[in-house]
View 1 (cartoon, helix red, strand yellow):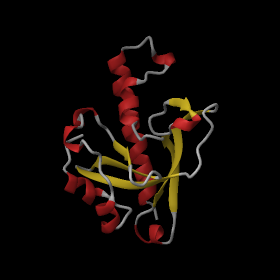
View 2 (spheres, one colour):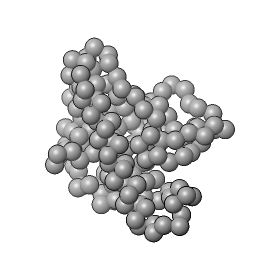
View 3 (cartoon, one colour):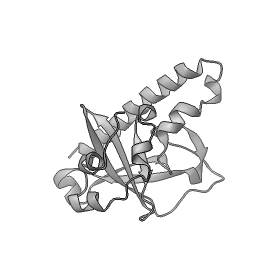
View 4 (cartoon, one colour):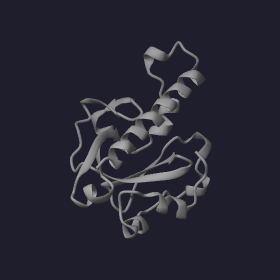
Length: 164
């Protein structure tokens, strides 16, 4: 992912108003992020704990979506999987996030949701958390495959946000 400025991130949001985008709390260390290792920029808003954001490159420009986490969490004794990075974790480390659809559908209250890592750090997990059944393969090859799959699944989620 190419480095983004605060203005680029704020302008990237497709499913919220300009006022909501302006009010979003961006990652504190935006300039220092390891951009070359990010397929997806994801973060939770520390001032609004149920709010999160994903920004990804799409057709040569950043596209961002505002998310809302479920009010309740799964039990830590339950196994769960992020449907973006496909990392198995405890239930309390995965949350149901919903995103308002774009355009009239979103204004009418239509949303789409999926289970995502509660901290939205899918890009890091796709690179570093290798499933046991892939442990005998080359770690760089596995990381490349997992990050490509992450990009594909995030693009699919964006497609559903853009669907009327």
